[in-house]
Length: 117
Image (cartoon, rainbow, N blue to C red):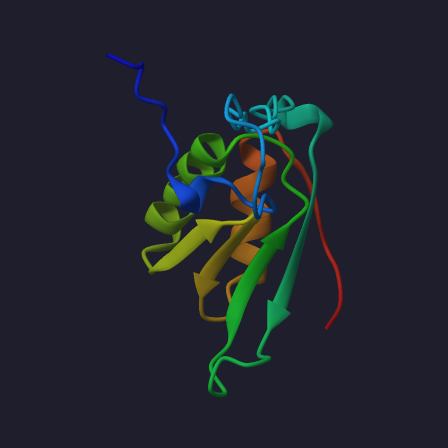
């Protein structure tokens, strides 16, 4: 019996078709290493675009894995007492809490600064 290959088409981003019978897709993306807080350069800004007029505090510039980003996002959301999300290298915090988020990040040892607005 032939060995069954994992050919989930949703994971083959950018590959349309292969004529090789022995083709086995390998995702070349490696897990990005998370920099220590002292080496992170985060930017805290207010964002209102395409959010139905609502304001969010946006933290960008995080270098690291999604899990570490979500962990930092959870910490910031808990300390601010509001909702938000953490994905695609960004942390969104509901409302205009730039000063509070900046203080929290700096207390955790991150290099953070306000940018824009």
